[in-house]
Length: 447
Ligand SMILES: [Zn+2]
Image (cartoon, rainbow, N blue to C red; front, side, top):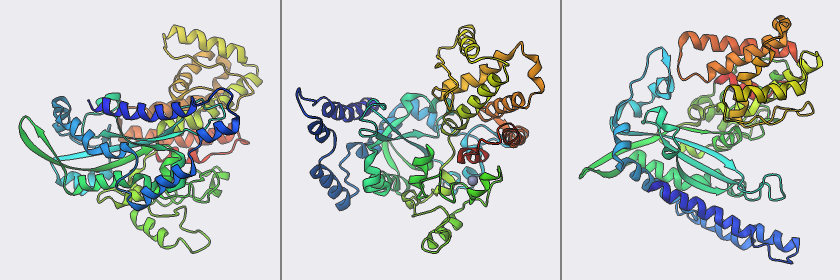
């Protein structure tokens, strides 16, 4: 039922854009079409006025369905059964967020038996052809909610991921994240203070809840966290620590002083003082209005964005280029082998064609992951490369990704992962000294 409501909202929004797009009347001039595609000043001013006057009563209907969605979920007997089985934290073994120190130190999760632990996820997406002139024009930001209390194998199920906020991406710059998020923050505060009432088998239930983490891409996390957004040029580019960008030039992968609530507030007090101007923070985050959440503890790194849509495709392409230049293999051989290995392993994915003029190997996150896993099989009859540093770099990169993707890690494996990341950085510096480190290379040190 809930899904139907959200699909309806989603479709309604998409339809609005499609209607706009198809208002392309025969004979209309490009300037007329531009006027149809772009929100009018009147429309923008009206929305702006509504948000400014009363952020709690947003013009977007998606804001208003937070409690309704949550109620529908909790009233479902199967969801409630999964949800009410209390999870037990592991000792010296990490398989879920409740095994970590941040969770164990939060009073709310220790004191409340009837509690809802929420995970939010934000990401923007194009709903028109991203290669055409409409690129970014109709881009939408979606915020989705997952109940953390249910077992992790059910959390990634699409039916358990609910849309709670939808708005045009351009409105974030126009109004700021605070205005866009205000109704959702208001609902979350009510959930923290008064809880949510719902009927189950004829009896009244009341559960309090709070946000545990806000997941998302780096730009969105920096925006919502109040950090400076240009992580490719700002001096302090990490939302996890006070690492300075200049250290990346020297391939330094040490982690700086960890960001905490205390130094976050000290940075806010220092916003107007040069030379560091808030040390990468430009304003307080709206999420810090919540009683049991702080952005220093609740904006974790994302494996897909940082690894498989981040550094791995670029490093894989460097390896392909090196192997072709060294005449170990050719680019045609790589493409042909990928195609035959895909059939041999019965993979449902398809690998886009690779050519040496590209900066990175093409494909989505899951395609890059599979590319990485089957890539070494291409070299099965090339034993001469065993001592090649680039081959070692490739094997360390695969081992690092294997550990990061593991569903469970113990203390020893975490030490091994830390060692793999260090060795990966060293081999990279040795093999590709002209290829600079990116902020995402630093971010994986926080995984
Ligand atoms: Zn850092």
